[in-house]
Length: 421
Image (cartoon, rainbow, N blue to C red):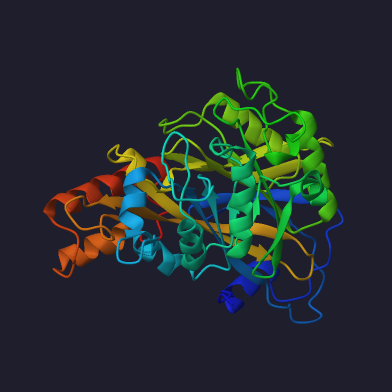
């Protein structure tokens, strides 16, 4: 079981004061700055202290970007002596961080259609070993609704879910049957270190493919015109799902969403419109993917259908987690986001209390043997090892690329949120 981080004295003082805190008669909100994020904090009416407040529940949800497997990565994962595949070496660094999380999530942007004919872009089909490596690295849940979900047909969707089940990696966004989709309206509820979170997942489309008429359940698609103009949001579908999520009465609701324009470092108006709608319907956390590059994060403020003020967090894109895309530094630079969630045991209210990120860079070393060519490295740790003369894989050229990648991450995400800052 992953270690839960509990800041006992400080958070008890900050969140609860010295005494018992009863439910407020009227809910109000105040903007509070904490670390790298701004969030809404409920103002409450207190009574005289009667008993010592219980400890808050504090958990850490870590989220990463696109898990991909292009052909050079498949070749690097191949173990010729056994005829098998192993991706473990590519994610040694992030695994050290992910295993400290209470819960970890990523976008699984490939298909496990079965071998031996494995492929990369444009129609992905990856070895099953990728799912095992993702699980072993510390991930608990993956979103499976993205533009590559149908790369290997409906059979590919089904087999991918079968393998994820085999490795005990939870999934949300694609489904093998209407019955499976109808269960909680396709929502996956996770225990994130004692805080319940309802996860949903959607994609803008399927690269021009259509789902069979008798299998609309197979993938969550938020556009009605998903094979053509990609601009007609399906409020009926998403609205029903979010209403079902509210009925689950979880502590928080999170949406993994595949959207935006590839290789653009800023969100477009359609992303912003969708994000505001999601927050108005009760979504607390929005995790974006598809652009393959970093896009910023922010707090969205809006009103729900009753006029009540709401706030939600969105990161528009994490960029690639692992991939073979070559743009320097854009497609090689990514992050793992560390969200601190805090629940007040007295009121039952849960809020986002801190946001930090760790920048990573996908290192390419084509001159080395298979099993050593692709590696996602912690930028700060890799630079520090080089600076003290202890690095086994960073040379002067790679060091300069790391410096450029770090500056790029700071430009898009802000330096203040960097965990090393």
